[in-house]
Length: 574
Picture 1 (cartoon, rainbow, N blue to C red):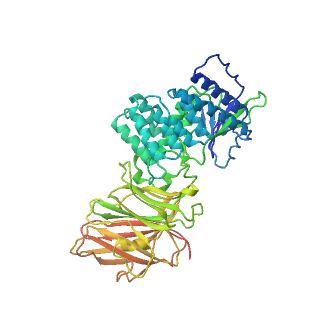
Picture 2 (cartoon, rainbow, N blue to C red):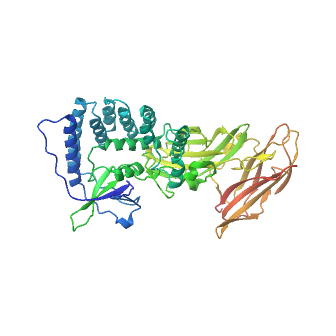
Picture 3 (spheres, helix red, strand yellow):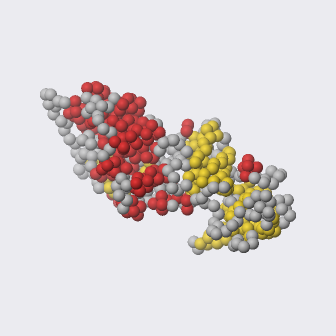
């Protein structure tokens, strides 16, 4: 909302404003622009005086952030905006009818075009807004941004992205720099290094494109609605030029900053003010829930070393917010992933389980896996429409550090489950033999000798019951094709957090011996005829108590140090 303020499950912003202004006196002969401007000013005055009352608001000391005369706060538990009174709706419809008429008379008058599109969108008439935008006859890039705005508000993000790209290309360099500028959305440390990149330089453009890719809510969708949301906000700033708004005193730099960082309000109410002066607060409600718009600077700089916590959607400080209409619920995805080498490529395996996620539609979900090198502005992806509620997805990408986004969502319910973090091969520098990740699977009788065999049985969670058998599959790379001795050790390491430090205590497991004729330490021989040695073991975890553990694999071959791979697991009881 904002209230001379702000806060938001429908984000909210409140503004302390008081007094009133008299409507303009009509002249005998006026231009379409002046006629429209007077009618628009009269409507906003009428709306301000007839806003529904809402007993909400915050004192200056309770603001999440103070921006000039505005107090902004965010609270998803706050009540939604009260319904708009019918007389305001009727008054807007009259204004829209006038703007439609004026738009046909003067299709080259940019102010009329902007207000026509603005109020049609506000009235939830998105397709009519798109028609109005396409009837625009203003030269340059102005009509393009109106079309892009209408397409974005309709949820046509690919079309919006394309149109905005055309508009940006038509702009003068100074305008293009303003429209692409990320300064309002990034944290202070990131902003300082960003400002050192010359405007419109190749380095700055590449950085901006990469930031927008990393900021997408769903990597698996076409277009980039995070970027078009930013451009839509910039378009709304254009709409507010020389136009009255709900807040008094005109559109200023404070309101512009809040609009660009948190979006524009979709509803307004009259909040409590100072009874001694008769003033009141105007409370603006932005869409909600609204998530962090752009990841923190350390994520942008090196996403491959991030974990899920770094991508938390409310991770402070929240510099800007975005409320995607298709993600009214955005929660972590239950999953397991592992990375295997195939020459110069990586095969990423991701198993998920959405069966205990009640917010997802039981009949129609989409599941996707996207992996991308950090330098890329696109991902290698596999998308399954009408996916089952638990499944395994594999995708290939270049071998090396990657960022992974596993995504399951229900379009009908606007609900998303997501797992996003960096991933890399197990650490090994200067060694001939290296390891893959560990992949847990449910034992099924045979022991898998390839990833393809184990994939159908991969666990879709890292939580297992102590009474279950646990299958562990991995691959060793660079082994001698003629065969060589390998010492294999497999242990479970309990995670114990003590005094702020992570301490590991090894706990021996009983190992089922069918996989190899050894127990916890195996004197093994690598695969013959191949430089890749796939292996699998089954663990009896019945001796373990509840808690978090790490399954740790160590491989020792002649002439190099011991290489390791590990995978966290949680025992949840029998």
